[in-house]
Image 1 (cartoon, helix red, strand yellow):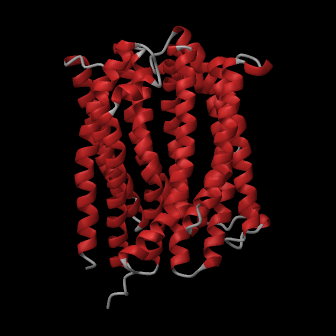
Image 2 (cartoon, one colour; image 1 turned 135 degrees about the vertical axis):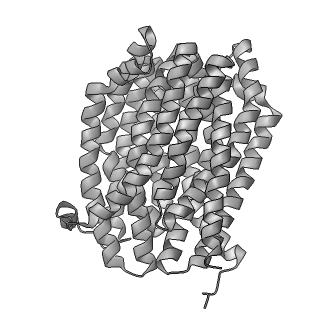
Image 3 (tube, rainbow, N blue to C red; image 1 turned 135 degrees about the horizontal axis):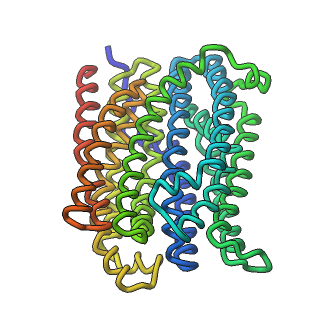
Length: 445
């Protein structure tokens, strides 16, 4: 006997209640990245290559860490779906303790090995020097990332994303102000250039992370005890870590592919890495809009799975995917309509504007299958299955690197090679991943 399903209007409201604060905070964060890229681009164009070469591998490890917290989100959502608040609180306490320990390991790694990682990316000269200084400072963001990622995962699992949005707004406003002061040396502050952007990020992230953690402890959203954080229940984190490692490996493989492609592009053209960074910034506009819907898919599908409402989980995933495609259509329409004006925000070089404007339509196309992979992928994880997405990403990593290498070194397409490779990769995986979700849903209809 099937459980009575909520109406489309009611379910959409539940999705938007979770997704809207996340989307707003992502847009605020995107605005920060957008302005940061524009500041550096106008400060010196090779600074974009320094930052992009630093941030691609940095994001690779960061995304792995974020993925670890997905186990926390899913297990808390399922525990709450089964009306077991005590279990949800124990999962939260154990995750807070262990993820913060991992965070300190990250700090040490990037301070010691950061410049060596950039050298492996194929950078040299001023780009390597700027990137090395940037990434050593950026390492300090990990001092508080463990508590932040876990607190965010707890809020997401409980379906309350407003505190995440509020603290992100705090971070973005502070970061933009500090970028303006520290990159250019305005109002008597030192002119630190690219390194100033790193200091601005570290300060704003630390303030925001501490604020979110403090809000979690005061919220009472779960019966979390401070003493319980320092005395986590043995065995709980093993299950969270097992889930998170599979999701983390998936994110790591995707990032490895991006690093490998950027490494190949550096052989072809070092300044091309900065131009690819501009296109990535624009692709992330649509991603940041629908990423909140992906979080909603994880939470609501997880809660439905915990309540053994498999039919509801399938319906929720489909509606989330539909909303994400609507958002991609809106952004794509803007990109197809005024590409040159958009590119002029980042640079005044006419040749660069012309070459990148011609690729912006392809970037808009990439966003559609990418939305399916993110949203439906999160729905699949919400059912408690992180392995499927890892399998398809493992295959995809090999294929996208081979395709990009062919387009770069045989067809000599430059930056366009990476854009076309991403489109092909996202497209085939979207078909396979949705097919998996649809087949799973059919079994419970």
